[in-house]
Structures are given as C-alpha cells and as structure tokens.
Image 1 (cartoon, rainbow, N blue to C red):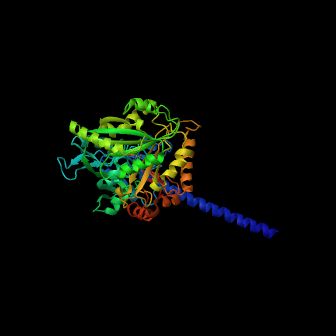
Image 2: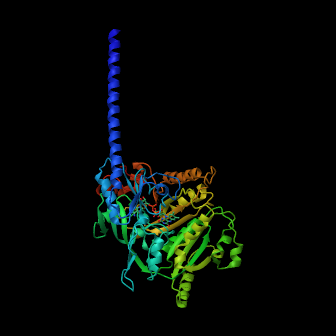
Image 3: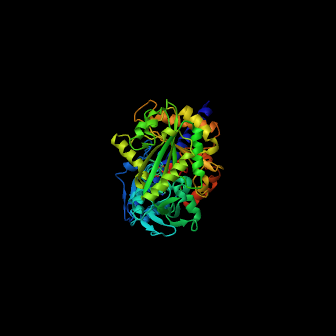
Amino acid sequence: MKYLHACFLRKRNMIIVRSFTILLLLSCIAFKLACCFSSGISSLKALPLVGHLEFEHVHPASKDFGNRYQLLALAVLHPKSVSDIASVIRHIWMMGPHSQLTVAARGRGHSLQGQAQTRHGIVIHMESLQPQKLQVHGVGGGPTPFVDVSGGELWINILHETLKYGLAPKSWTDYLHLTVGGTLSNAGISGQAFRHGPQISNVHQLEVVTGKGEILNCSERQNSDLFHGVLGGLGQFGIITRARIALEPAPTMVKWMRMLYLDFAAFARDQERLISSDDDKFDYIEGFVIINRTGLLDSWRLSFTPEDPVEASQFKSDGRNLYCLEVAKYFKLDEDGKDVMNQEVKESLSELSYISSTLFSSEVTYQEFLDRVHVSEMKLRSKGQWEVPHPWLNLLVPRSRVNEFAKGVFGNILTDTSNGPVIVYPVNKSKWDNRSSAVTPEEEEIFYLVAILTSAVPGSTGKDGVDQIVKRNQRILEFSEAAGLGLKQYLPHYTTRHEWRSHFGPKWDDFVRRKSRYDPFAMLAPGQRIFEK
Ligand code: FAD
C-alpha cells in the first residue's frame, strides 16, 4: 500500500514538473513572438516611406462590399510609390516565416467575403498609389493603342482619360468603380467578353511586387510564368502596381436593347447564336432572369422606349418567369453611321425568337452605357440600400448543362429575386487564355456566367435576411453538385484546402508551385483563405 502511494506521488510530481516545463516553454515562445511582433511594429514604423503607414484609422480597411466579414488590420499602408510597397513587403519577408504579419492589397474593397482583408496584418490602400498621369500610347491611328495605369486605378477614370483620345479599353465589368488590380486578380467579365475575352485577356504587361519584395515586370515574353499566374491569381503571387491595357477606337453612341422570352432554352439559344456569330451583330450581349415581378415593363419606360407601345402595354407575364436578352450596338454620331447601324440591327433582330411585343430600346452615350450601374448605385445609396449585406453567388456553368441548371435553380430554388438582379450570359472559352490562373468549366467551348446578386435586408430573419439567402445559395451549390453540373465559382469562396484543390482542378499544382516561388511565406492576400502563413 505504502509502495503504491509512493508511486502515485512520484507520478504526480512528474506530471507537475512536465506541465510546468511546457508552460514555461509556451510562455517563452509567446514572449519571443510578442517581442518579435512589437519589434516588428517598431521597425515597420521606422521604415523610410514616401507615403505612410496608418496604425490608428484602420476600420475602413476591415470591411468590404459583402458586408459580412470583418478582420481588423494592424495598419494600412498608403503608398505613394511602388518602392513603398516593395519596402514594406521586403521588411516583412526579412522577418521570416514565423512572423504573423500578412499583407492584403485592397482596391475598392468590393470583395464579398473578406478577400481584401487581413487580421492584424497590413492592408495596402492601392488607390493611394497615384501614378504619374495615365499614359495613353498609340494615339492617332497607331496599330495597337494601349494605356499604362496604376494597379489602384479605377476603371471609370481610365474610361474618362482614354475617351479624350477617342480610345477605350475593349473589355469591361458591368460596374466601373472597381480597381484594375482587383478585377485583374479575378478576371473582369461583362457583355463584351464574348468577343474580346475577359479583362485578363486584354493586358499586355504588368509590374508586380512579389511576396519577397522584388519589383518585376512581366508579360507574355518576360517573366511569363508570373504574368500568367497573377492574371486571375486572386492576389496570391504579387501586388499589381502597374498594368498595360489594350485599347481600341471608342464609339460615341450606343443603341441599347432589351427583349423578353418565356422559354429559357429559346433565350439561351439566341444568346449563343449571337456570341458565335462572326459578323459582329452586337458589341455587347448579356441577359437576366425576371422572377415574380409585375409592372416591369412599366418601369423600363423611364429609360427605354417600346418598339410597339400599344402591343407592349398589353403584354402580361402572368407571374411566369421571364428571360430578358440585353444587347447593344455601338455607333458613331453621324447620320450615315446611325442609318447603317439601324439597318444592321433590324436584320440581326429578325433572326431572334423573342416575344415581338416586348422589344424596347434606348440610345445613350458610350460613357453613360458603360457607367450604367453607377446610376443604380446612386439611387440605392440615397435610399440607404447600398451598404447592406451582399451574399452574392457568381457561377460559371457549362453550356451543355445550362438548361438543367435553369430548370432546377430558376424553376425551383429561386422563387423570388426582388432584391437584386440575376444576370445570365454566355461567353466563348477560346477568348480566355488557359495559361492564366483564372478557372473556367473544363472542356466546353461556351460557358455561362450566372450572377445571383441578391442584397439582404439588414437585421431581417425572413427570406430577405442574410442567413436565408446564404442557405438558398448553399442549396444552389448542393443541387449543382448532386447533378454533377461541373460548374465553377467566379469570385470563389471556399474554406478548406480540399475545396480549393477541386476548384482549381488541373491548375492546382501550378497554383501551389507559383505560390512557393513568388510568395513562399504565404504573406499575400490571406483573406482568400487558400494558404496560411
Ligand atoms: P478588392 O475587393 O479590393 O480586391 C479583390 C482581391 O484582389 C483581393 O484578394 C485583393 O487582395 C486583391 N487585389 C486588389 N488589388 C490588387 C492588386 N493591385 N494586386 C494584387 N491583388 C490585388 N466583376 C466582374 O468580373 N464583372 C462584373 O460585371 C462585376 N460587377 C460588379 C458590380 C459590383 C457592384 C461589384 C461590387 C462588384 C462587381 N464585380 C464584377 C466584382 C469585382 O470584379 C470584384 O469585386 C473585384 O474584387 C474588384 O473589386 P476591387 O477593385 O474593389 O478589389
């Protein structure tokens, strides 16, 4: 008995000594990390910069358009030069892999799930990187005009500047108050992509600061691995500080048309016919789904004119789903140009199978057309409905499965879309460069962008509340997965390594290789949650 008691005491003492040693070790590590951290902060503060690091006013960098994720940054860098960005990154790189500091470039913060945020890291406010004036080259009929812009430049500013020379970029997003670095890190898709490809297919050259703080120029010919990696690379391989963007002669005016279909298959068939046509029938092709809306045509009358007002006023949707084809034809503002355009449009429309009484059109300047979403933004802002949660879902659906998707999703899961548009249009995969990091559905020549852009009502627990919309999005993903539709997320959001691997599919190995080459400590864009420092 005495022996057992002694054994028990010895064991207990050993456990106490071991626990004490572990505790001591852990506090040493914590102390060391804290020392590193605070010495890291003070050395960061001592960096000679043209711009500055802001440690107090960091809250605006800790939220985004999605309005659902918030990570509080340690500091915000307002760079005035590329070397400011390189110095900060190089400094953190020199601190080694054990420093907790990460770096997130932030364009306009129009991400949806914290992709441009970092917890206790440095956010780079890219719009502070004011370049010298935007430089437009090839003015006056040069063979390949282009513009050199800062990675933090807004597309709307590029439009304004290039229009002064009668030029404009070829490929856009629907909304232009986004930054060059932000859209090039994803793809940049809109109604021109069927012809020109996404924005990432219209870039000649980039300047990039890697995760080691090197400043590198890259293009098809120079550092091409980095160039292709960064395009659609979700900010993982470097910070885009400059981009050379292809331009084309700009039109002055746009004829903008909308027409309705009751049958999704007919709507999609016409969209595909138009994007596959060689003879430039339209310059912009999109479409959207109208579910459970009454009085829609009346609201269009504010900005569109019905081709046949009497017929249009008699059209009733009777609560059925409608599919709206939206197309645009560019033209120059001279009478001849307009007549030719009108004749061409008439011929092109005659081949389509929309409901004839539902053709609406409008003529606007090119600038008004491209900046159209900003008008909606101003309206929503004035009603306090812009800065609300945006549980958006963007999908790329292979053409061969799009009818099945439409039946399951528009027919059964989305039964009310009053709080935001559902955009649907096809693009040609041949216009995408498969060497870029952007992910598209495998193998098929045509795939559809389906953007379900629902706004939530803050605080609501009903169907318009954020939780219900997130659940509905999840149902759409589960339905697509169960049906094996082979779709990909655009502006992807995943939480596990397994999901990321399957998202990238055959591109995963290259993605991981590039990460270890250009950002070996996984310091950049941690908000994407692909790699962990
Ligand atoms: P941020 O949200 O700030 O950043 C996005 C990601 O890129 C982050 O991971 C960030 O770290 C990284 N990043 C930012 N800048 C750089 C840089 N310079 N270098 C490297 N990485 C960087 N997209 C389309 O394709 N087509 C559309 O039609 C379209 N319409 C939209 C309409 C609205 C109203 C909104 C809010 C978004 C729309 N988007 C569209 C999505 C848009 O492309 C993304 O939100 C994109 O992230 C651009 O936003 P941003 O410039 O604010 O980038």
